[in-house]
Image 1 (cartoon, rainbow, N blue to C red):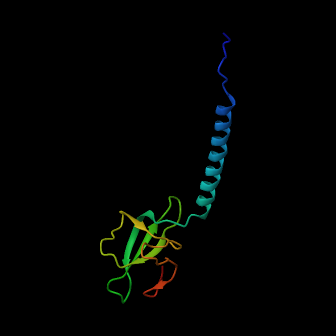
Image 2 (tube, rainbow, N blue to C red; image 1 turned 90 degrees about the horizontal axis):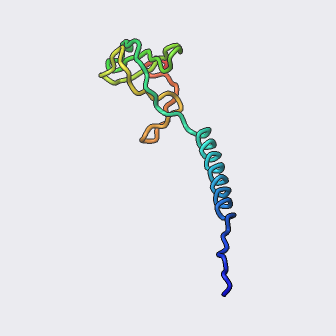
Image 3 (cartoon, rainbow, N blue to C red; image 1 turned 135 degrees about the vertical axis):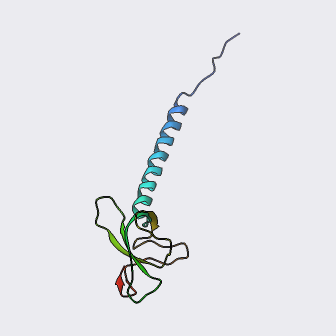
Length: 113
C-alpha cells in the first residue's frame, strides 16, 4: 500500500491577503476622493450678540462665532428663539439645505448676511 499525502496550497492564503490589501487601498483612495468633494455642512456656532434690524420687525442680526479664534460673522435670521451666549446650528454660505436651497451671502433687510 502506498500512502499519499494530501497536497496543501499555502499560497491561497497569501493570494487572498494580497487581494484584500488591494481592495483596502482602493477603498481608502475612494474615501479620500469623497472627502475632498464633500460639500460644506451646517456647523454649531455660538451666538455672541443679537440686535434688531432697523425697520424690520421680525429680522435680527446675530454676531456668530463659528470657529474658536475667528472673528464673529453677521447672520440675519427671523428665528425668535435666538439669544446671546447659546449655541445654535448655522448653515454657512455653500451649504445646501434639505429642501434644495443653497445658502449664499446676500443682503437681507438691508444688512449683509
